[in-house]
Length: 65
Image (tube, rainbow, N blue to C red; front, side):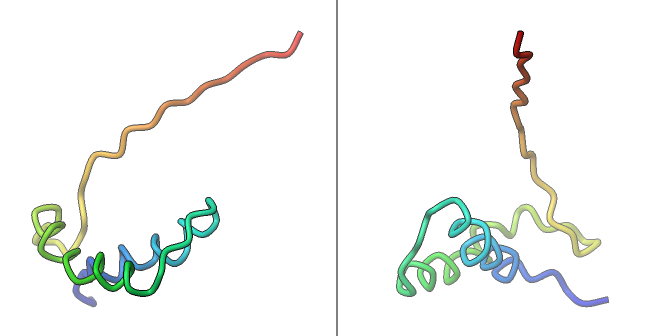
């Protein structure tokens, strides 16, 4: 099994999801974030090579009458 790579996980969001939402970062910004990602996120890594963290969400529904 391949070891968990937190910077790769973060880079997927920076280069994949953020642009979809209209957030475009400069390469310098991406580099700075990735440089610190592993240290900052290390507490979320488990011995089973997974990242575990809370991710609350709000769901709103409506009915058009």
